[in-house]
Amino acid sequence: MSEDKVTMTDVERATLEFVAQHRNAYLSSQGRAGHILDYRHLGGHRFTTTLLVENFGRKTGERRITPLIYGDTGGEIVIVASKGGADVHPGWYHNVLAMQDVTVQIGGQAFRCSWREPQNAERRAIWEFMANLYPPYRDYQAGTTREIPTVVFQPGDEVEALKA
Image (cartoon, rainbow, N blue to C red; front, side):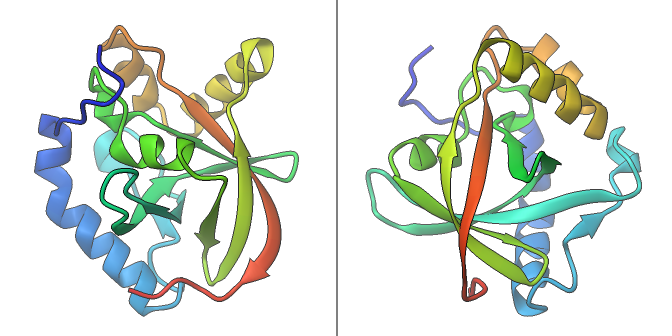
């Protein structure tokens, strides 16, 4: 598996329009719409929390805003780089790895965050927590040979909410 190669999965292709509408609703409503979604139709839960991660293309420098499911563990924000179970990591994940810190928006509040990847027992505990939050993650992991990464954000200063 090439860490640099980013391809689109069938899951991504099928959800491109939904993801764009979700991101746009989140941004245009200043977080009042889009923070909580009903993912029962995908095997998830009725009240699934989502955030926005601002990242910049590591090659292009292009600004991107990515909506993702998140959890909160001990005051830290946790996300999963699942890419729908693809055999390669998502582009946003590669971009975050290339950044020192990122802006994360939850509802109407945005924060500058540092990030880290949990390891060993902490990673396993966070994976279990997130798989309970969104059960399809288990199927995604079963469908790929890569270990799906988890990323932990430590919120810092509050900043202005993201804009399109």
